[in-house]
Amino acid sequence: MDHWRLREKNESQSADGFFYAFVRLNERKSPPEYWVVSSKIVSDLIKKRHQLWLKAPGKKGQAHNDNPGRTFTVKFDEFFPKEFSLEEINQGYNSLKPILEFEKEK
Image 1 (tube, rainbow, N blue to C red):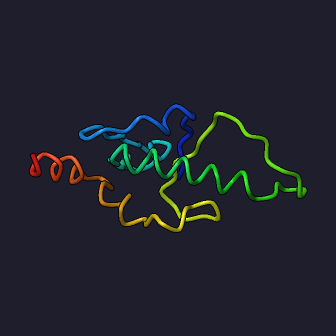
Image 2: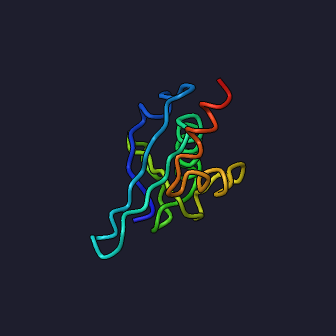
Image 3: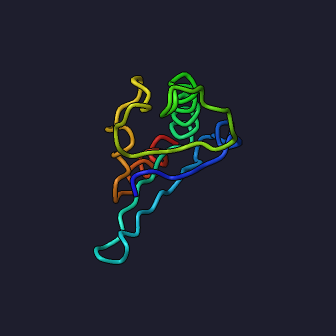
C-alpha cells in the first residue's frame, strides 16, 4: 500500500513538533517500512491533493462528489500536487530524521 486514508479534519491538524508515522506492513512478507512526515506537509498535501481530485473528471467523465475522505501517498500519481516533492516525504523513509532535525532547531 502506497497510500493512507485520512479525513478532512487532518487538513487543519498541523503544528511544530507534530508528526505523522505512516507504516506499510508488507503483508508480513518483508520487514515493515515507515515514513515520518511533518504534520505541516501532510495537512497541506492532502488538502491540495483533494482539490486536484475534485477538479478532475471521474472514470465516466462525471464530477467527483466532495466527501470528508483524504488520501496521503508516498508515490507520485496524477493527483500529487506539483508544489510538493517526494524527497520531502522520503526524508522520513525508515528514518526519524524529520524529528531529529526538528529537535536540533530548538
